[in-house]
Image 1 (cartoon, rainbow, N blue to C red):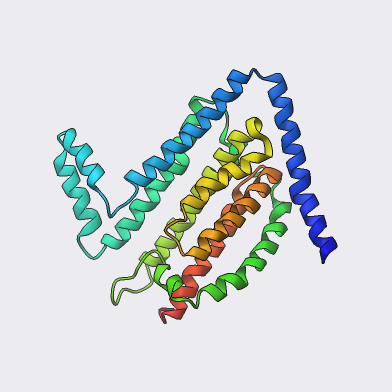
Image 2: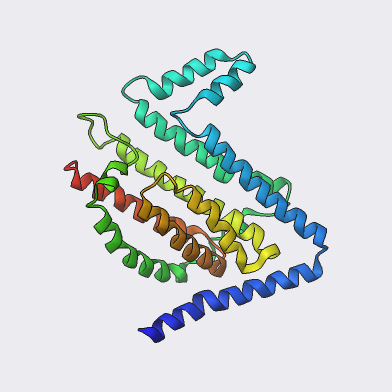
Length: 279
């Protein structure tokens, strides 16, 4: 077992870090410092813009910022309509989850992708959206999922877990179909967006300037978005950020990370529903 762990660390961490650091040094040697700093600042400021948008414009229960903005534009009736859509009626809970997913797609994908295209003059393929050649790496993520599953199952028996999941809370007497299953599709799309932002745009956007250390830079905001989650999950985000970030640098893609994230999240929802007797 020690030899296996040492081999895994060497193949998937040490060698990846050495390669990324070498590529960073070569880039910095051939690129004016001002340009390298400008590109890094563009990525960092774009990431801040996406996170700020999500925090202030992506909370369906706190619409004051929309009311103030629309009021300034003399569109108060739109704010009233948004209130009715998200707060009143039987479907309001689902509308809130839809609103949550759309705003995250904007903050995590649309804003960074626009900057990649129009400012950095690059392709999102080089920022984690790569698909070609990633199939052989699937076994690494499958093994990781098998390691995570027992901890998820154990956590599912706790009260904080069952109070948190699923994020879409069913109305009394509401069947699972169609809204819960529609929510699960939206939930999966949110993980694609999240993985692109953290293990794609932020990680690959900064790696040329900071090398492998970018993994640690990325982990900080990633853990912070888990501050409202159960304590154990927040701590687990540190490990997940390190592992998924390193693997994304190795594969050049965030897709397998999105897949395992979705599988774990769906498993959490199904386990919680099972414990609540709703399956």
